[in-house]
Length: 148
Image (cartoon, rainbow, N blue to C red):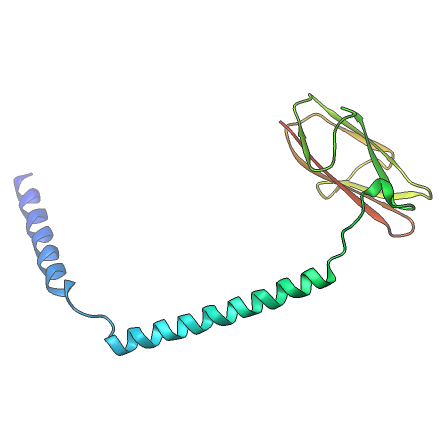
């Protein structure tokens, strides 16, 4: 055991001495560091300019999507329980019941990407859910909620 401690102590001492020896070595010259910094500053300026261009494009093209209930012809996702549940909200209820309707015909309904009944669903497990309902005219509606 004493031999092991002695060997480990020697190994540690060698590593320590080598580390101290290399501690003050410059990995990059001052010119290299200056060049790196200039390149980074230019990249940052380019990214900031591109970001401003994108923000400008988005604000010019922004069209606020109306509430699904205001969209005629789009499938409706109606909370039956709790009736006060809104899109992108959280509930502490022990279940959520949603009803799907449409002026034409509901042709697909999914819960987190998995197919569900075309008339509605009941969810009783804690989690976050994304419900998508589509009609035969390729209109879609999304409803997201969380059960705590």
